[in-house]
Image (cartoon, rainbow, N blue to C red):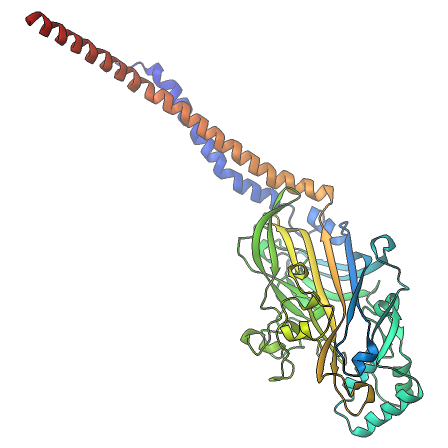
Length: 488
């Protein structure tokens, strides 16, 4: 009769395996619980504190395109551009007028952006000069292009008497933060309606309260974390031609929901260009020794409405749409003859890339970010967009009479980047994510070792019986041989 004591180790090992399996399956809910407790936009959570007053450095780099042959270009030659930069500013973001509605699970705020010039990270200083097209001249020429010829004649007279040129040389500071345009001021004195008399790429954008945004705080549904519900009181934008184009999708691009699924598409509302954009999964990698998903801007984002039905709403003057790679900003920024593209016309139509010299599109100019999939925290981001001036031939205005029928002339591209190096956040993510990964590996190894021990115990009687059987077989064989030998 088998000894009951022989089964005690087996019972213990089976119990250990069951416990280990239970703990293994409990790791993921435990990890989910740890992350969930911090990934809410409610006072006291680590995410909220970082969102309210970000400590992550955000350098904003500007690369200007200096026009080196203005006279030749005005006479019909091909424009030759020289990239100058970076001119680097540190961007500081502050959330103000924050209002919580815990019952509805929403959060309302305004954001202030402050910019500080960093001479050490720049190629020069803010007084460096850039030669480019005269934004005021082009703006008013575009605005009056459909008016009677007498207006064009008036522009021509004023232009001659005031030595006002199609081209201008301005400092970096002026181009970015604004300058008073004498021509526009003069036109306003002649009772000609002009949208503004001061011009700047980021005029009134430094240290001024921004738009009013209402977002989801993620408490009731973490998949909705950061999603924009209202933008300046609007759920639907008024700028584009279709409902789909005017939809506000996703967050503001600074945070996403935790527990991302691979190949999941992500959306962000880019308020600077008045539309939502789509990011697609590219690859898996590591950043700061943490697992990361790389996302890139979808190639369809700036596809022409002529070839992409989904983008038909972004064509302002159908069927006279721009080719691939640019976004018409005339409704987003009224009276501004500008289109937006990726830097160096990356992923844009070849005709835009070859119309000027000094443009070198490559993958390095793609907008992309790396995100830790368990927490949804962005580890690294590079957002690169380019401002291009729309130039059109106008035979009634002498300085526009010999240029191409239409040309997109790059003015500047900016690279807004951020790299998560905050030790507190990295430590938090490491503890939760890497800690659970290590614990999971330890559990799996423990289960394997325990199974091996259990197998060795269970197989021991069979091995013993096999040895006895083998011994008896050999003994019987020897006896048989001896008996055969004796008979002989």
